[in-house]
Length: 311
Figure (cartoon, rainbow, N blue to C red):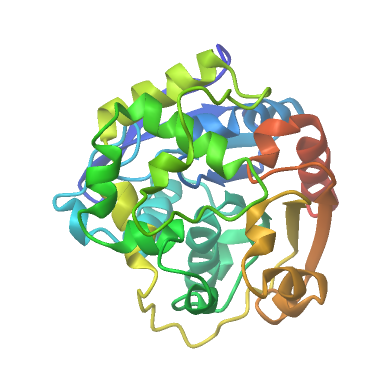
């Protein structure tokens, strides 16, 4: 990753850490998920830069090396969107392609709805655009589902607090690489679904884990638990709900998100086009939720084909 440069850009009174590579006239802005960080896009950044694009991958406020918000428990999606908008304004970038993963998909969706003039196209991985508001699938899942557990103030903090950040990330990467939904028993915590004897996924190295551990050593999980998990009911007061730009959804066939109640039908019957009419969907057969790290070459080919087609 020696070609990737790092800098801090002051936006909205906070210093955001931004990873950057490439100097093309077209810019790709990467929006990470959880427990991911700028580093989750390492393979994609190098690939798009080599193809002639400029790649930017910030850490959201409260994540990685970026400053925390003044009160992490009051952070919200709109803060993240405002930071990204201020970032490209500060850097003098007129328009971007958004590439988003996991909860970063909602960040990208709200950004595109609020600032359509700034968006050339959107690629999402691991999740489609969905109607804004609380996710309906939660009502069909037991209280031990990881999202429900992590929405409870204090519960995830106590669960995570038994381990160092590196171990927390390790267990989440193992857990979220499976196709089964992460659901704990009544007297069990989410971290207990993985034990220390379980190996990391073959495509995720100890060196990768060290990087994630160092980033979450810096930031902790206070902001990460607020956004996304405790901000899912956030209201955006947006009247126009369609993102009318070219869009690509990349899903791993083994991604546990596909097993959310109703999600498989939502994606395969193209209901997602109600939110983003120009949507094309591509699948990577053995891909997990971390498909861009697991199969970087396949993910990169799909992303680059999209970027070139719409540039």
